Image (cartoon, rainbow, N blue to C red; front, side):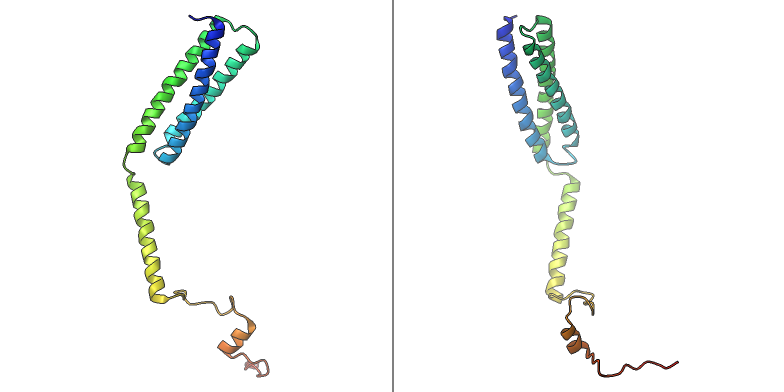
Length: 162
C-alpha cells in the first residue's frame, strides 16, 4: 500500500471523478424520462447519498491530521462499492437510452396527434366560433347587447299582473 499522503491524494482525485460521473449519469437518466428512468433515479439518489457520506468521511479523516490506514481502507472500500454501483447504473442507463420508446409514450403521442387533428378540423369547419355558441352576457358590452338583442329601456316590459 502507498504511503498515507499519496493514498489520500489519490482518493481525493477518485472522489472528484465519482462526483463528476454522477452528474453525467443524472443528465442521462433525466433524458431517459419516466417511467423507464424511475428506478435508475432512485438508485442514483442512493449513490449520491453514499458519495456525500464518502466525501464527509474523507474530509473528517483529513481534518484529524494524518489519516490512519484502517480509516483509509474503509474509505477505499466504500469508494469501490460506489464505483461498482455507478458502473451498473451507467450500463442500465445506456441500455435504456438506446431502447425504443415504450408503448405508453407512443400511445400518448398518437392521442395528442389525433386531438390536434380533430381540433384543427373543427376549427376549419366552424371557424373561430365556439361549437356550443357563445353566452349572451359574457364578453359583450351594453351597446352590443342592445344592438344584437334589441333591449330598449323606454319600452315597458310585459309582466303578467297578479
